[in-house]
Image (cartoon, rainbow, N blue to C red; front, side, top):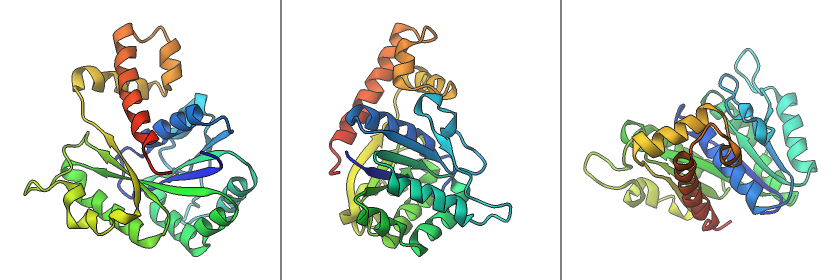
Length: 242
């Protein structure tokens, strides 16, 4: 994992983009000794930037007229191109379309790859009522770029299956784009009263796993359950074909 750039892109709001960003950033910090740089381009809900331990830089790339400010994003691109290390770029639902348009119009993905960066797009598909919209976001991203995709399957909204019972990864929607996916990570739904409550407590406090481990605000069993969750997620990330 040297000189990688990870864009978290999904047009659906509240689907877990910041959660994915924090998990990915912590895994990268453990995986490689290169500098880790994190960016939050969410204009309205800059949650990622509140994780102080990750030193996230807030980059408000949109103007008051809801357009991308090229100079602000140009500066971000220059930073991604000129500084070595691994990068995580979190993006809000409100900036998804204009940001994707900017990246494509300026051939930013190709520019990064030509500059020796390995580029990945992380897209999230949720279950339950979020399945249709997030699946369409997955298709749109898959068809608009040649960048390898990492699919995050978020089960916290329900299982990823249609009303007929067909699992998303067995659907035509997924299979016709499956060759674009270099790996999948499942955000499994666990017991909401234990695992769910502990992860929620951790997220509300904007804490990393290392901070939880050192904190006296979490008891031994809360720490154990958080450890179990992140161990599983890190093992899944290890299996992605980076």
